[in-house]
Length: 116
Length: 111
Image (cartoon, rainbow over all chains, first blue to last red; front, side, top):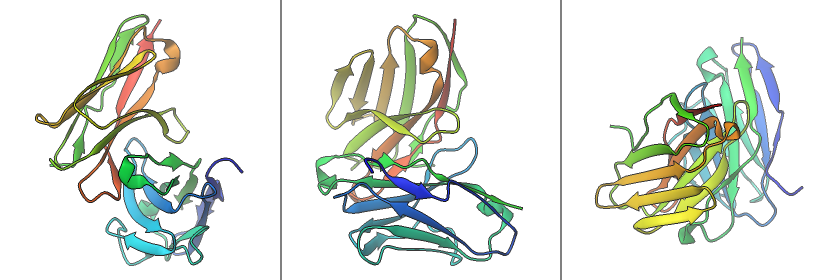
């Protein structure tokens, strides 16, 4: 596809369940980002990959969150033992190789997670 | 202090007028600055990027950057009802990796 693809688009999880959110970046984009956006807030940085290397995971809120990108393409954000405060939109974004030239990031449509 | 700060609004502007949106940032080494527009229920979409001091114009949009004051703004001329959205300021800091977003300013264009 032409854009960043995320699945599932909508997920309702019971508190304590594990969830996995998938991101398929734009072809050829080596950089991949995950953001969390709560209602009425801006996107909050979670983690960043360059190819398969996770270069920054400083935004992951707890050890229940982890992300992987084993082959440098598709990425999965996993949330273990979900809590109500995890309810948010999880946005994936990708960027072409030359991020240091100022190229920006392009977002997918997001995965809307509701924990009940 | 948040790394990127915006007034949350709502900012209400009459149709046809100029809307002015402001943003300040804390990392003096920041290199790249972006404005995104986000409609309700949609993901952010890029409007403008700016990298050097001064003004950059693109159609009805003008981005302004003042690195000494750590200030970036977005002007929307001839505002239209379709401009009603949340505008997110985003900054790529000196680490040259992650992009940090402000909390957004909600803009409403009244007919």
